[in-house]
Image (cartoon, rainbow, N blue to C red; front, side, top):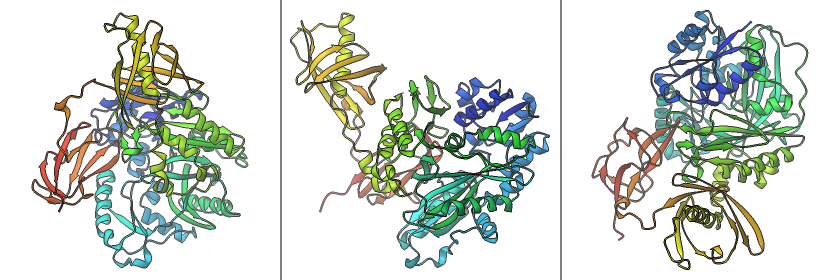
Amino acid sequence: MISSVLVANRGEIACRVFRTCRELDIRTVAVYSDADENALHTRVADTAVRLPGATPTETYLRGELIVKAALTAGADAVHPGYGFLSENADFARAVLDAGLVWIGPPPEAIEAMASKTRAKELMAAAGVPLLAPLDPDAVTEADLPVLVKAASGGGGRGMRIVRELADLKGELEAASAEAQSAFGDGTVFVEPYVEHGRHVEVQIVADTHGTVWAYGTRDCSLQRRHQKVIEEAPAPALAPGVERRLHSAATAAARTITYAGAGTVEFLVSGDDVHFLEMNTRLQVEHPVTEAVFGVDLVALQLSVAEGARLDGDPPSPSGHAVEARLYAEDPAQNWAPQTGTLHRLSVPGIRLDTGYEDGDTIGVHYDAMLAKAVAYAPTRAEAIRRLAGALERATIHGPVTNRDLLVRSLRHAEFATARMDTAFYERHLADLTTAAPDPYAPLAAALADAHGRSRFGGWRNLPSRPQTKRFASAHGEHEVHYRHTREGLTADGVRVLSAAADLVVLEIDGVRRKFDVTRHDDRVYVNTTALTVLPRFPDPAAQQAPGSLLAPMPGTVARIADGLTTGSAVQAGDPLIWLEAMKMEHRITAPATGTLTALHATPGQQVEVGALLAVVQQEPPL
């Protein structure tokens, strides 16, 4: 029996595994980097072992340090979570060689699925339907569009859709460079790209005695940058017979590699056609929706299988529907740029919330931008969607910009509501989903709340009738509001101020009474779901940047610079000039206009803060 588990991971998944371990009276051991010294997973574990350094390569990707930590802390088993070393066969072997229990599949099974090209060969031999890879040198116009994919790793890294033959060579090189940086393996391959395909997967659990259970299906079609955003179980509106074929293919895949433990077999579904994509030999981020529908604890099953238990009888029957949304610290309107800073408040009441953060925690630059997974369960799909959208809309999230509004609008979009979504959903709808009108009264509420606070503490020095002005910035631009402090109280044109306190403002607008909850953290003000930054009354001229300045949209590391790019280089509008890496994602900084590069401040490996000046492009004068 397992008595103590070290989780070779961090954040949300470490906390998730610890939760089940506590329920089973299993002692927990965390590992933490210097950046995670005060992280939630470090705080909640029974024991924690430091991994010196901050970056993943220095810490969570150092298998030998993690094995040593397990032995030092007296753990007798290791759970890899997902990401990092979770699909590293050498790490699994090192754990077993140290006399520890590996809570995962056999190293040989991990190895068999580690390379997507090798996995496809095995699946083809087992009769699992798939898309055959294409020879990159033989791709023609008739083959387009195609998908370039990294042979190793996952998470959308090293993946490109190519629609023009002339772009193929460059995208192959870019995907290879990104894959090399992310996984240490630059091998890529090409396969047909299926337009309007759905990403459907099957959760399997296998024991060491030959039994394989298939736990229904999940749909994970809503993706950004080939990374999942919203997932649900079961996959809705599948053509007749498709689910049975998916289960058959998934169990065949597991048996082919003598799998044991929890894993996921992913497919691309288009109508009646089913194509194998890959097998993830670990627990998936989206496993909670399967847990909700089947009433199981997949982490507990992993532990049970690792202890040698049998899966007796049949898997439980599914009931109801579950939907999960990944809450990210990112700005979808700014090319999904990750965000950092203090998470002052995170509360999504009424539903399951899996997170690695608590109020006051810092969101850093070194790791994934996911804050939490919000999961809603209900008897029907429509009820589950409504419940999740409502919970997210009412959530209190104070801190860096998040994708919360995008999630709510996505869940309420007609295509998603009627199960007509596919993997190109955000390619079609992102602009509409990120341009919703801001609440026009939020800045006024923020100003009135501030005015109430100042009046209480004797801050008023102006004549009562003199108009007051406040300026704010939001994701939608700058806002200037005006109000007066009179003998009758605070007043503003066009509305009736029913009450104004530091934390609550009530306005009557066109006969409708509206409440505005107000919270302030330094120069940030949160009014209901609107985030505002307090601006000085008069802008600082010194803060202005020269036209054509390329500023870092997030803190990160300069991964690389375009070949041959130097001061004086001619550039075309849209040319990628600099690649920044932040939170496990690579972001391209492109030329804002056609012209000449007049300054280049970025160098490969350089750490930059948000707003740092990277380069300047002087635009060509119009002809």
